[in-house]
Length: 425
Image (tube, rainbow, N blue to C red):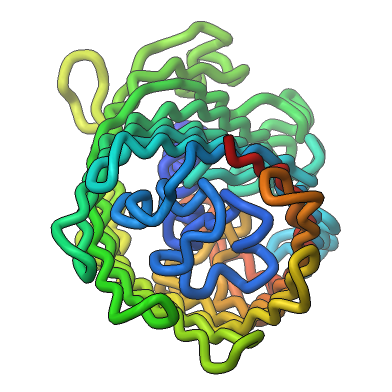
């Protein structure tokens, strides 16, 4: 096996992962922007308008607020993702447990009604995010390693009420993305070099941060006080990553010898539509539901270039459009207590033959519950909890030319816990 080919494969694995981190999170459609939404599996989010967080989901709902509204909180994500497998070269175990670390996802929202027709709002949330981490001596190091992406989406919105039935809203999104990818040589390099390079040799380290911009819009149709429907659209966001790349492989073997070199790639996060409904079917009961559709078929390939415009890698992805469906109910117990629950299904956009162990994407099922306690007419606290169950999937990945694919099985679950404080001025 040629060491230069192994290095190139390691570089490709790292570069693909930094992009796929965005892809995985966006395909997964991170919804963790409010504890109230978490408690109902984010069903009916474009039509409920029960906290200031609704302005970041559907800006048209801001016309339903008669007073300035504020909400701030966080959701704690506790995943449990395990990988099992066996090396096709040495027969050694490639099992890895808890490869996804725990994460906090904060949020903050504000809505200001200007008069009976106009309202403005602002929010800061995270729409994309991922972290997976394998040990430095992991046998399949070129496709394992560390993958870490964090994003912050800041949004400014304005809404206008046309009449008692129709409201319209539009917003501007600025997304800041910060990514770090690290890969190690794995078991193949010490075998080929006779121990000259150990398994934990840094085969690739890629990091970068960049801004991307987009817009969103929404319509709210209120049949009456108890029945309303929302339609929202979120545009494609283009992120041009200009990052730094290096590794610890000697230059004679095709590496950078620890030197940093520039590289860049463009990622277009696809557009998304969502239909939502809210119906108060009894004095104390309401149902709510959503259908979200993301045009992931726009994402067909990844291509990165060097500082001289040369192609560093090109990889076919072949993603398909994906959807998310959610259904929930709310029980208004009294003036102080509100209870909610929900279920949801997330469709994965990743074809089976394009899965990776750094992003073991899979279909997911949600079940959620939550409550709100109102201290008075101004202040309240939301709490929510969700259990997310992912299907068990098989993964086949190429590590180097002339070597059989590494075969894995991945399964994952997650618990999510959220709390928000709300205040109406």
